[in-house]
Image 1 (tube, one colour):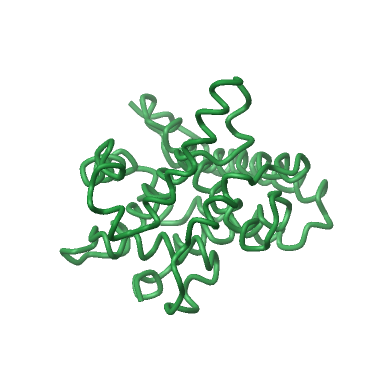
Image 2 (cartoon, helix red, strand yellow):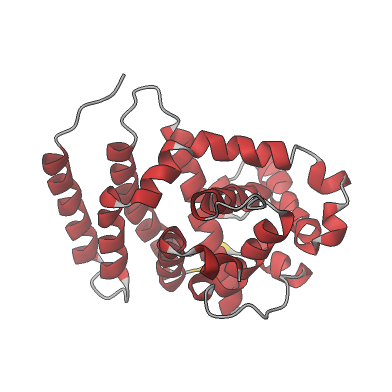
Length: 255
């Protein structure tokens, strides 16, 4: 069963919301482009495919990397990024102990969410038999975490290391930047709702993945700047990277 929308009418509402965000944050460099990029996702084929096939991508991830695989498998020796990512588990244990807001820190689930997102991107862009090879998945993860929206500019780079993940572990939101992040997400989720029209859809899971993926990208931006705060520029960088990945050619992703 599907929900019927008057797309033109709904888009006018979303445009109005977007205009209000821009009006309230006029001095944020790059925001106008990000909001424009968000609105045009209504006509984006990759955005549509990603949303409608999200459950398949989650299953691909769980099948390839079952629970516990990163801790006991040989993959963590071949790809140190997996070993170091476990540093983020400490944040989850601490936050559960003190019942703090989990959105305030980077936890392991942010890393797993971004991995699901990258598997989805490869599924959309790569039609080869080895599209889900570990080399491609972790190679793309490493490139984007280090280069963000410049992921297509350089392939000769070192791997994210222990210090990088320790930096992620300590990153927190600037309150004002967090509010802007939520406002852009709200516009994006409105577009997502027009894309996923099934009543019993997994839209909450999809939006949750988008939130965690974008938060992880913002955190990586902050660490790359040498900061322990996710600020306005990191929010802009995260969304710019997200949309650039959706529009990228496969050669830009895996070279």
